[in-house]
Length: 464
Image (cartoon, one colour):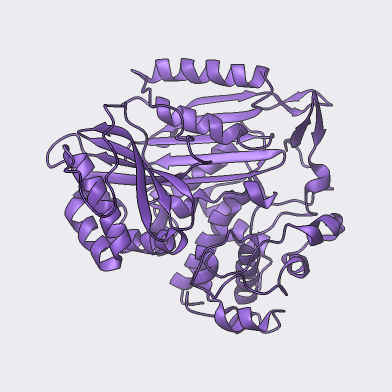
């Protein structure tokens, strides 16, 4: 779970959508002036960026004017504004860089965020009048030129499945993929296949029911649990760390950092990966509290709310707050309040020294050979990541959100999500696009971007 590869795409999803067939790209519109876009899709994209940069009132006006009524019913206005606040807090001002797709019902462009991050924004609209906006998908890109695979929608599911099968088999043969792929339509699996070995030494193949380490995808469950407690009035997003953890080592952080800062990664608390983690006896990290000495006494990187920093440490703190409020072990609380209601019977956390039936071994390539990632793992995963799940269980998670099983706490994600987790020897991605009916789950026991690369390619191939 090295920090440079731990991704939380949840933060960047407004509504998960797929990619459209490429038209003739138009030039990007500068932030200060309009180039008079020729299509309503391009006009809406320009209006969105302007509203994003202008603030919450402008964004509210945009959502009410441009979004399709059905889309707003699926994810209400306030839920979308809450996501906007999170995203804006992380990214700051957006500057368009390059149009990468254009058509009457779709538009894609890359933008540079104020924090320096390069992202791709995909807009999708209703095919019929009044062409209301269905969703906007934010995708973090690796760097200039990394715009993802070119859209190439297949004519039907049979063609899609053949393309995925060939692509995954080729990637597995080259040593670039080992894992499981699930594609669902309207919550029903329509493609399930596995590739490579769960255990190379014992020659145990991966199966669709194999359990994989999902890395930072666990942050989604932590965030949902916090919002559930907030909905139950057991905490407020304005509460400080110190209210729940009075002995927190950094007194400035305890008094200034609020729950909302932790959720949005705008707290200034950094990571627990680093020299202390490398020097630690990782086998002895068996509770959330045992992660604290790795980071909690460090000074904040900035005043809370005034910046953005990927924060595994912040999600450890959220886990400890959950424990303090509920009186339950974090792992038990998530099991009882998220996994069980969703029917996720194959998800959880285990000590790495324990033998877990069906759990894939993580592998890191070293030259022409493979080594396990065992030495890099803590004694147990955390509220920041490192639990295990299966492809079918992650699908069940989206179904539970769709059904509203988590009440108001789940509203923020009902418009769709794209989340990922990665570290040495593990990678997983979940793409849920309820407006289009598609769900993609790709899990791998190899380092990033093994699963994310496959998931992005599948998304580019989804039939229209």
